[in-house]
Image 1 (tube, helix red, strand yellow):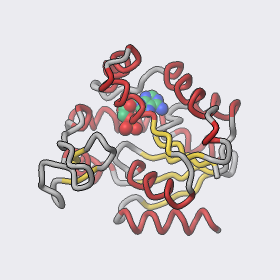
Image 2 (cartoon, helix red, strand yellow):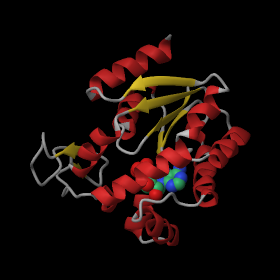
Image 3 (spheres, helix red, strand yellow):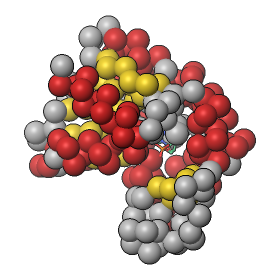
Image 4 (tube, protein in one colour):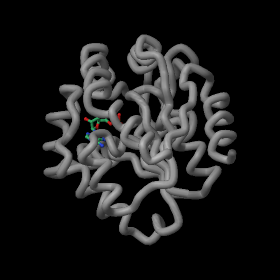
Length: 205
Ligand code: AMP
């Protein structure tokens, strides 16, 4: 199964990706995670991407497309993959279509004011685990013990800019993939388990 997870920042793409990856046994490819890993390793791509990410802007298409193209050519992607946070623009979607067309696009639709609350309270760990201060107040990750941090782009002002980038550049993808008959809409204003149940149910039918 070749799946794209589409949705605004904070709609729950990462949370659902972790569940779907296990369920379908396919690799999870997150361009945001790829950039954060480059940033922590201090690579040139990381430094370049950070200058856009910290402002709530999208990283230019050619950089993102190159990263995804080389990742999708790896052997573990042969039978399927889960793209989280890519494509985010029409040119990215066109580049992906030219390389490997996907089977379906899961569009997680969540209320933007709820998203602002979710993201300002989000605490992340380097291992990929994510918590919310309202339900987890410890300073360290329950899974690996790593120190939790607030992502630089999870500040309210930056979140609002990321949401505007989503509306302007990414939301048109719903229509783009709708024309291909590939969009599965799910309600992202529910608990992660309910969203997951809805996704699996709709993907199976
Ligand atoms: P995410 O973790 O998916 O929210 O991504 C964090 C940030 O990385 C985004 O706000 C963008 O600045 C950048 N980014 C991730 N994926 C893409 C993409 N497909 N196109 C452009 N920028 C991206």
